[in-house]
Amino acid sequence: MPQNVAKTEPVSILQPQTTVNPDRIKQVKIIVPNSTAGLIIGKGGATVKAVMEQSGAWVQLSQKPDGINLQERVVTVSGEPEQNRKAVELIIQKIQEDPQSGSCLNISY
Image (tube, rainbow, N blue to C red):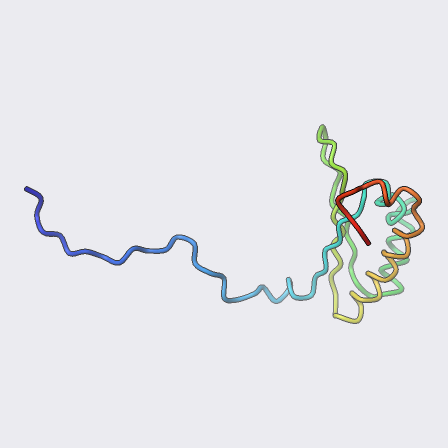
């Protein structure tokens, strides 16, 4: 016969996150078609450097994984709200310039 064991309250493994990483608040993530990523980067990185200089925000594109044919890339923009707004505006202009940007049916701008 089992001994009487004091019952404990179940512990929730997944606690809701109540704090936000302060750096995360200063980030914007944009999903762009693969074809557009090259336009955003520009020759030798010239376009992305210009976006960073004009906006003051840091802009980084996710790497294209080897062996996996993904249709999108993630652009992470980090900075103060006004810097991020300016960088996103410049990036969206580049996306609109790409005639193939509509080729990715999962994304609508």
